[in-house]
Image: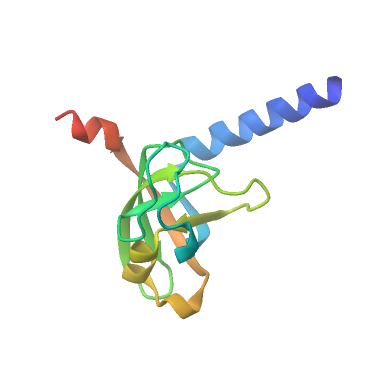
Length: 126
């Protein structure tokens, strides 16, 4: 039981620490086309042409600016899904979002991820 409590608090502190960070260096990949039309963690349907992302670090609804460190190209996305728990330090972009910053054949690219103020829900209420 003590082990689980320690693990829980370690994960919680890590989550809070990462959430407090405004800019991090990660890797970006993209959703395979086979996921097009499936539900995301928010209940939305994944559409490969929308500017969305999956992450284990950021809260659902968080707006991110993702910049390719090799070519400086950027894209704004909204986190609407979670990734597999064993994938760390990566953000999974929709196919269209990834194509704005890199070519698909690159697969995984180093990126800088910046949290933008406000969330998708806050923007829609204006």
